[in-house]
Amino acid sequence: MGLVSDFLSEGYFLLFLIITLGIIVGRLKIRKFSLDLSAVIIVALVLGHFGYLVPAEFQTIGLLFFIFTIGIQAGPGFFESFNKNGIKLVMISFVLLFTAALLTKITAHIFNIEGALAVGVFNGALTSTPGLAAAIEATGSPNASIGYGIAYTFGVIGVILLLGLFNIIFKVNLNDEEKKYNDQIAEEFPNVINRNLIVTNSNIDGKTIKELKIGTMSNAVISRVKHGVYAITPTKDTKLHLGDIVKVVGTEDAIKKASVLIGDTTEEDIPLEDNYKVNWVLVTNKKVVNNSLGSLNLTKNYNATITRIRRSGIDITPSAKSRLRFGDKVLVASDNENMRLVMKLLGNEERRLSESNFLPISLGIIIGVLVGAINIPFFGYFNFSLGITGGVLTTALLLSKVGKTGGIIWSMSGNGNQLLRKLGMLMFLSTVGTHAGAQISDTWILYGWSIVIMGAIITVIPMVTAILTGHLILRLNFLTLLGVIAGSMTSTPGLGVIDNKTKSDAASVAYATVYPLALVIMIIFSKILANI
Image 1 (cartoon, rainbow, N blue to C red):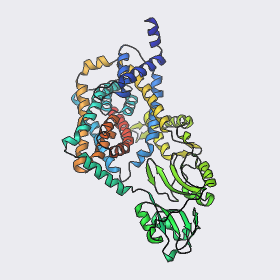
Image 2 (cartoon, helix red, strand yellow):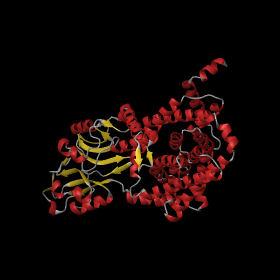
Image 3 (tube, helix red, strand yellow):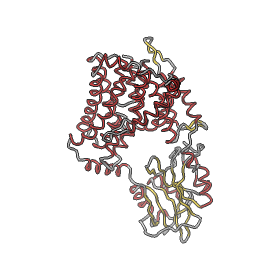
Image 4 (cartoon, helix red, strand yellow):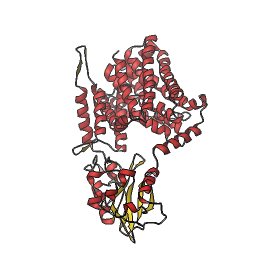
């Protein structure tokens, strides 16, 4: 026992013991329900109750990794969530979170629950670990962790149950909603296709592609031209003649417009030369990131044409103004020799997608901490600062939006981000859990079931408010609405429940749209609740 006690007194050993036990407990399932990684805080509360404490330094380091990786991942989606298609989803998310914050203040007053504990219940009921991080920083009290730990379990179960029952309660046929969603997507994001046209318009005979402005007028791209028996990759100076066969790439609507200008569809094929290639190429060279296709001028420099950009699973018809992002896949048409040069220019190194350069991470965290330390006076009444969580999160969001500064790319591979994010969260939860566990018995004796009831109210009523607003007032697609609620509650298990009910990605897209904003709003509301 003495040897075990010696090991448990070592902070690093205790940290990894809690993480290990927490992961094991989190994998235990009862009717498909599990606590997952959040079981770590339960284990930490228990060990903290018996007097074992992880040093506070691990909490700060874990917090910095956790918040920074969230911001880097969420940045592009956070700003894109304000576009015209996302504004309704953002409204629903804000209604849910504002209702939860308001109920927190009301129920805390009714049950006479002190502020730090109430903010912890708020975050536990909405299953938000980033919000808990902000609450602990703002309050400086372990009670926030206690409230979180007690409310979290019902928060997870409540979200899963309600998301599984809402369609039954409102008598909504999810198959019909899936069809409506797919029809809408086909209209808003038409597939990029290709078609061969024969030049029959005498008005364009002998004119160059540049003179005809086909790309500007139709939003289509000409990738191949067959003149007689010769097939070439065209440049802007390529002339079209009557009887030429032209391969056009674009949406159905774009090809129809190009057909009016060029001529009718033909079944005649354009044979590929032996040295002609059409390949998908990865954009991994940081020197071309954020550059427009026009500035690269691949047609003139390499006699190559980019006919399609694939980004986040969506095909985009390229234009001269299209800017490349790290990780884009572009469809390049060119001869064999120039294809090799284009690949070298764009990078095309798949291993780069799985690499994580630590310089942007450490430098970004330093900038974030400094930003968070800035005090902003408000008319002499009080000073406001973002703090560590707000400063690092705001900095990461902005840097990920900028994408690149000089030679530094402000991005991380998906695998690298997930690993560092989980490590940070585990370190954070292990530390705050042990410090909160030392006081959990006294807190339960003082407040008892009031905390559980308060958490249940904060979980259920905001979800019901959101579903009524989205379904009856804004008339959102029901699958999309369920995804918004899961994203607002930052509940991955909740999203899993919806995905089991449909083959559509409606809920996943909505979840991804509001999730970044929900993280930020939760942090803001946590800070507000901690200071009023």
